[in-house]
Length: 225
Image (cartoon, rainbow, N blue to C red; front, side):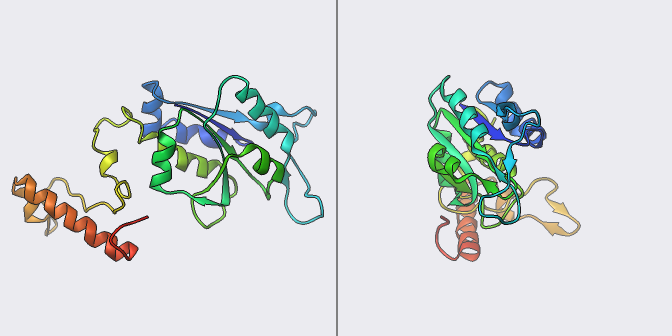
């Protein structure tokens, strides 16, 4: 998979994209993640990527030209399955969407900033708008990292344990179960006896019961959406 992220703040993405699972996925050449600086697609001496909003009002709006030119340059090299604009008012990101996107070959993520982005970018370039929650961030960069991380870890071969992603919370509509590791007793706190029993059938049953209970308690139903 190839993921292109278009942003006015590429340095904000450098560290998150070069750590942990995302770093290993790129080292394995399973995924290629490239950040593109909007300022590289400007034509004035100040590399201006934003301007005051028409009609007045507070804040600055990202200009359309750099987005269009960057997307057009990328699309001239390959086809893209989705061009996603990260927006606070977009479709709420879920594990189901992450799974859908993990099956794609090429993705572009568009990051807004400041007061927003020229509406023509959203209407013409974006094929999908995604929000990571009903709150406002300074820009779309952190949201892009969240989406990339959730998607990439689902790609076969990225995780060392083939079952890890399959047993994540939400992957089958339910939350995960409690997890324990050594020592079995710590400061008077012990782990459930069933986990020491060696009976994998009983352990699997216990884990399923815990997942069902946690889903009902925290999501108010038999499954999580």
